[in-house]
Image 1: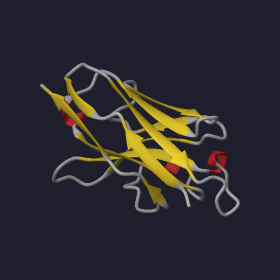
Image 2 (image 1 turned 120 degrees about the vertical axis):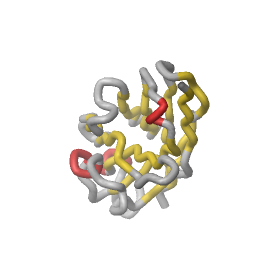
Image 3 (image 1 turned 30 degrees about the horizontal axis):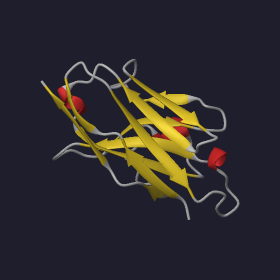
Image 4 (image 1 turned 90 degrees about the vertical axis):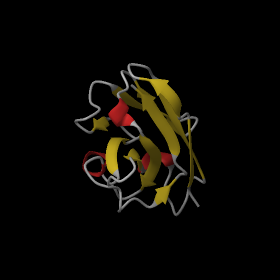
Length: 133
């Protein structure tokens, strides 16, 4: 079965940077390889609904971003390592949340980024990102 492991969270001052990693394993599974999945980052702040942050399709490397992070965050995929990264620059206090990576073989990355992720099949444990002002 597909497993995802998120890491890289921490405490950073506003304006700082962090890089999150999502290491995927268990491929191929049910006939699908890593390239066949949409891999996304979602986040959930206390008292708020989970929201999409960024998604990528490893097969073509096209990135998609929520408006709130576009221009500050960069998603990338190392297909050989089966790892997706989220480089977060110019962090703001409102970026504080638990960040989760998720994968789905049937999802479209361009669609999934605008969802709460309820349709994603596989989830990793979250990693806490705290941005102090």
